[in-house]
Amino acid sequence: MEEIILLKLGELVLKGLNRRSFEDKLIANTRRRLQPFGKFRVYTKQSTMYAEPQEPGCDLDGAYEALKKVFGVVGLSRARACAKDKDAMLETAVSYLGDRLAAAKTFKVESKRADKSFPMTSIQLSQYVGGELDERYPNLKVDVHHPELTVYLEVRDYAAYVHADPEPGAGGLPVGINGRAVSLLSGGIDSPVASWMMAKRGLALDMVHFFSYPYTSPEARDKVLRLAELLTPWCGRLMVHVVPFTAIQEELRRKCPEELFTILMRRFMMRIAQAVAGRVKAGALITGESLGQVASQTMDAMRLTGGVCGLPILRPCVGMDKEEIVTIARKIGTFETSILPYEDCCTVFTPRHPRLHPLPGEIEAAEALLDVEGLVQAAVDGIERIKVGP
Image (cartoon, rainbow, N blue to C red; front, side, top):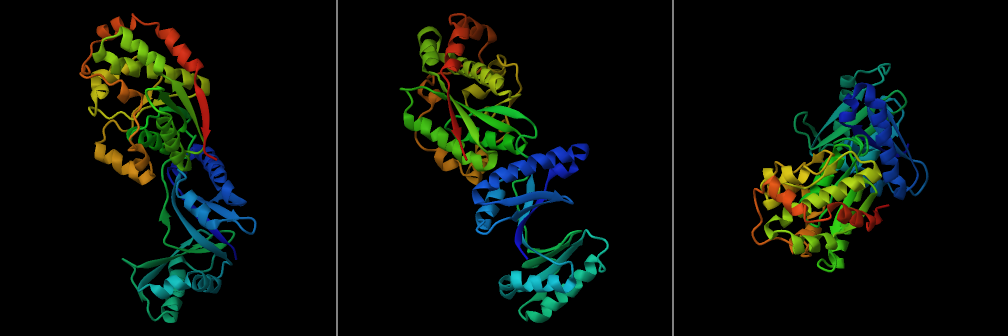
């Protein structure tokens, strides 16, 4: 019978009355992710999701790799379906896993009998198939504690499945199940990681990038679009809102104390990101801030930058060391792009001696010199929207 992909569901199976909506969102996300690889039937039964090829030529290898990055899946494996018969399962194990059985030194068989009408218990089925495999493969020894290869037999209501050693999935919750947020995406290491972390908690994302041409180059903008593209296998298609930020920074340089530039710029960013959130019906902002990492990320600075925003500001990296953030960046494939040497809008206007603990009165006095509302509106009106991903 046909080869399929089995996907084990994560936290969503614990959501009680919300379980159906979680499964529906995960099925929809999975179907979209599989579109480039051919026609698949995707459905859930008994806390397992199935992806079945529906036409010749489906790219099962590509589909399997793509599904490793679908949030909401905790484990997956390629499996062969067969009749619900002990000998059919044995012969399927031999034909489907023969090369791996021949190469292994130790193994065990683990059975799960969801169909309670099946005439053997799980232990009896494992003993029968394991005993037969032990006789057929002289190289194999049974090791129930630390086997080199585990053969899994699953007896469902509608079929049996044979597979080996499932791989871990992405975990988390299906993207979009918890609403939408706007992530401030710079060209650095932290903000792509923060975006990924909140997508893993079920948020669909829009990205906002602040672009200061000609102080920052087109290559810097392209770098950010590349970072967004690298996130799409996890997050799905993204809209990147590229904000013209030069006029605001030049106005700050003309009229405001240099040591307050960083906080003032961040406050403008929050106002603009909140305006974008209103347009896309997002309920929160996301930043890559880590407490104490730079001058704009002290407690006082975060309070002042967040004070202009009426939305929750999610800071998933706030308690992480840089090394921890880098580890995730490497894992998700954004690190090498993040360290490309193109300056972003913050680095080109960095003050020589930024104020670490600015006072609210100082910030308010500086902003009184500016047409804050007009500058924000002009930036919002000039936004370029770029779709990234399939």
